[in-house]
Image (tube, rainbow, N blue to C red; front, side):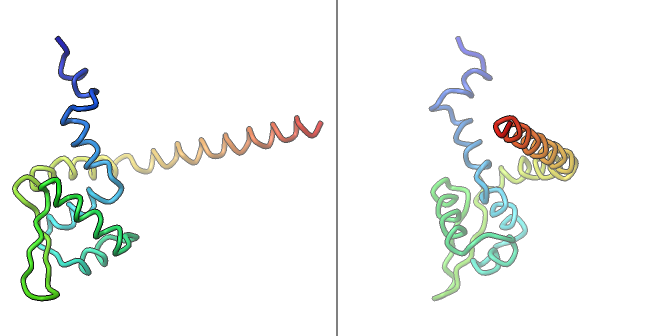
Length: 132
């Protein structure tokens, strides 16, 4: 019998779907933005730096398909998005990830910079050896 950790690695495991949802580049940010209150599309574009209108629309549709976001038409040309009960269950894990990023993001960035510097050094060394 498989233990819980092993079953989470299976292709058809619900854990993989949950990880896929929150690991999407924009999904966690959109969910977090909507957690602060119902939002219109344009408000979310302004709130979430760097997201295009097209990508926001795609992300909102995908989150609706997962049952995490509700789209409410208030009046013609007035649509608001809010979290469903299921969507609210993801806010705490997103906040935990946000806290982790705040606490450790600088360290991760330092490691990335060091790895890039190492790669650049290796490239120069290899180029020098090839030229010799």
